[in-house]
Image (cartoon, rainbow, N blue to C red):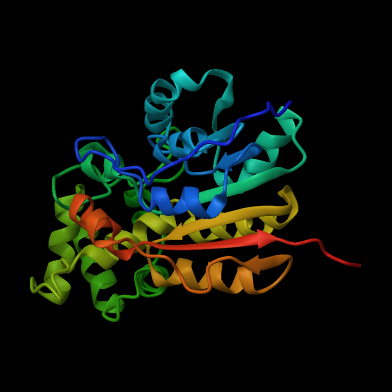
Length: 309
């Protein structure tokens, strides 16, 4: 791909409207820290293309956006039409972004962005099965065209494996009790929907909210992460980024819980990275009013340095 010349643009922090299908978290901070004046950038979690649009508006020569979610890709293509050939959209998991770049004939990019959160679109669509706010099938796949569903996972693993998933990925201290109740509901033929799963969790831990958080939140998070192999994807992304970002380029990762943030922090302390953000950047008061889901977001950015051998 030829990188076209782009006149540097003065940009302000984007202010997204709440009626958008998904409000991109920390979009202004991403633009400010990635410094997209010219160059080729990769958005490995394209979603509704909010971050990609912001990077292009700020002067990126081109952005390649990838996502596992076919529905998100449809929306992104429409939103990015005005950018023409400066925006490319591809269906892929971000652990395989190297294959996408190879097919495009691109060895290295000037920056990579990953927003690890589940999008509002995915949470709000009941048929995706990612939320207990409405009833839907126990699916939870980001890529609905392939892979094992949450129900399939629950059916396949034994009690010990299910306990480990809920404990490790959900950090649920009552994981053994939760796993046992889920399995009991499954064996009784009463586990088919998201509300069935929530009832099983409530039976195990009670209905009380802790700090305003629903008792089923941690279990749903754990199963979604297991279904989509999210920690594996992140590990692969961090390893590939060290190879496919040019020296001087930047990696920006937005995480939403401690497991992910710890992985990112450790990775950016090693290898060819120089920290741009000494501590994670979080959402300001104005953004939290528009988008309460941003409250747990943490943005870390690092610059790729030349490795002297």
